[in-house]
Image (cartoon, rainbow, N blue to C red; front, side, top):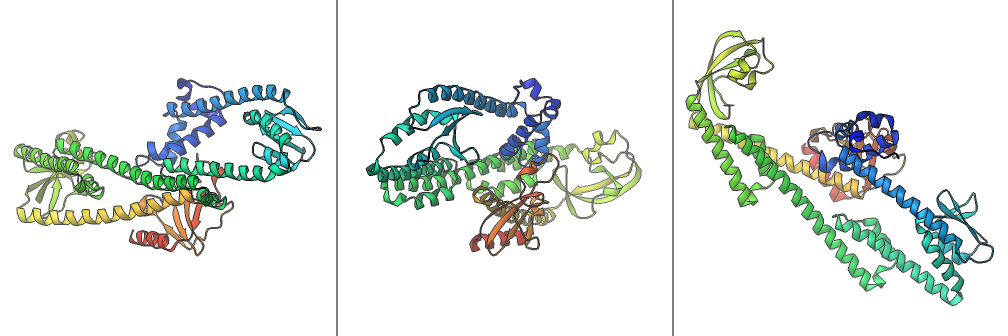
Length: 465
């Protein structure tokens, strides 16, 4: 891949002219969407922003990583060329460089076959072993060990191979655990390799499983705390304008603000500040407001107006709304210029009307909290399926059993529960999507084995909407 500077990566034409760079940018956008843009734009929009040059520093990371890989590979090829010149190999064996790899040819040797399989692959057509240049430094040791191996050492070599494989798979489990992931395939492989016969390794795996659970819980708590602080900031910003941000308050309660005294105090203070600023503004504001007739408020019922509760009592004579009215009467007139409007008179809501309205708002917030918990349940199982599931080629997912998730904002995504598996089907057919990942008719289908408890949890949350 060509090397680019930040200026070039800020130019959309750079991506249009370099398909390899454009593919890299899409992969990067897909990988970083969750932590950089989720909640503010769709995955497709984020990819288009990246391809438009809006995130040059993000793409530069990938370009530099590929450049570093290329430089490392070139250095490894040069080192491998020197290494094979000094190799001491059995009779009939030879080594050459081929397409950046070490090509080894020689008579069949069962011991060497096992050793070379750890660092290279067998090319059936050319009848030779191909070893990546990066692993060439291990060839001298491989041939030396093979030359010194005897019949008595064969059993020991097999045991050593199994132990190394066990440690390798255990390292995969530990790497995933550090990121809060439980690598089930790695755990199963370690058990198949007899980890229970190696107490020290068994202890490491038990510790990794504990770490995975603790890290996953910590990450979830960190994300929730971050969202909570963000929404409290929204409520505080609205309070400075004398407005009560009902949606933000609902989200704060759904995210557990009542369990954090300091953040709960901030939220209560913001609500109080909004009421005070609203009252101060009401003292100077005439009890009438210009409204568009095609969007007039209901009469004789408490409704929010400029952050406080009022009751509209009547509409005056109509007139055309001109372009200066939004700046004089409020942003609610934006987009209605030229339409018919009228001055609506109103009074402040009574305590009884306020209490009734507050109860209705409380009921809606309670329902919003329940809905948020159900959406969180579905998101949790979606993420679980994507992290731990498999993507079989040419997946056959029944359409009639799909649970449509439009109420979560996933208009084209679905979860499918069958007798054998639980699927998450992610739409991936839009322009700019990487269609090569699709395994199910314009979508990416990921599945885990059927689990009755998970299926019940998903069905209950999806049915409730």
